[in-house]
Image 1 (cartoon, rainbow, N blue to C red):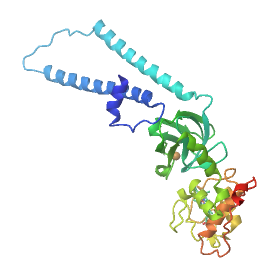
Image 2 (cartoon, protein in one colour):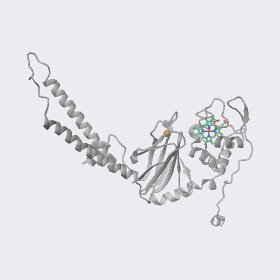
Image 3 (tube, helix red, strand yellow):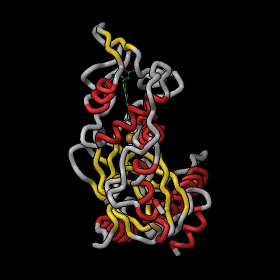
Image 4 (cartoon, rainbow, N blue to C red):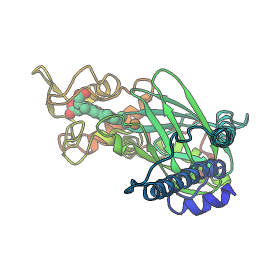
Length: 342
Ligand SMILES: [Cu+2]
């Protein structure tokens, strides 16, 4: 019954469901929804009827005293709503408990929310700004926030969970279909809240491990400047810095390496490796003139090789740098590369 109502409604209100929660969440939502529709129509119809029927008419004398109590009526409008509310409570509580207790074998991904970017940290240490998951596998998300309250919202999976600074919040789900879906921040978190979105990529079960191994290995495969560009996009730098010369939340990083920059307070500093490293790890140490101190620190989140790759990338897009840009990957495979040498 609730399923049928859900099907009728879902054409209008919600995207197709792609997770284990769909039928329950939608069923309850549409149950409440149709009750509201029904009540709305009934109340308006009754009201209209009464307004017309009992309007003030010439020469009409109302009964005195008017009836003011009906036990039957009062019991009816107490008992029926109580039953309805208990049904809502039962299904709501059951769904809530389901969502709060992940199966023990769930695949765990750490989620770090920061203005205005999502970082998903996989068990092997890889960090991505899209959420990649295997299909038909329970996935558990452990959320934290680096700054303000954000909220992870995946409409097609019917899940929404706040990321709160200073504590961990958890949620879990099973994606039931492969494909790419939207992920939003559903908590107003400042100036660029509306661009704090990303994509959920649901892989075939067999394909996921391969994707993860490849994704984690890019520093070993790509020339440093290319890897740096990838990190720049993956880790949210691009959310605040353009590379086309236009100012955004932060200064454009095109043609800055090797240049002098004016800081708040009036001093000048040359943009070199150390300055960039410091900008990434301690963004508050030197503030660029006419900008706010809003860049989050990447202390403990970017490895040295990743910072080197970022520096290499910034060199590669600067006309003030005319040194060599290496083409060999920064990291080497630990195992002797037998197959590749033959
Ligand atoms: Cu946010």
